[in-house]
Amino acid sequence: MTSNIFRLLKLPVHGVRALGTAAVDMCQVAAGGADAYYHIGMHCWDIAASAIIIQEAGGVVIDTDGLYLARVIAASSAAVASRIAQVIWPFPCRRDDEVHHKCVHGETGVDRL
Image (tube, rainbow, N blue to C red; front, side, top):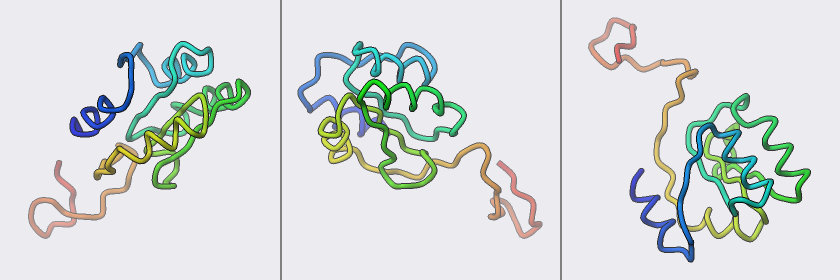
């Protein structure tokens, strides 16, 4: 996960900041306060309203692997989003709302975290 941060910092960036929730950070993109926002493991309700705000402001919201907005890049333009998507590496990120089919400990059928 931190390797993605190092990859992003190799791009021509002025800084990295996180202001709070995904919605607040994405609205910073819509308002022009940031060029892009990237997050892994989102829920649709975390970003639904802010995704519309970005799109209405002329920006784009993409999912790097097409799985229910799980790996989101929100950017001021498609070119910025595409450039970020080229350097990040996907990694497994289990969401907290997934159904756990795999037993971690033993054969009991109960998922133990």
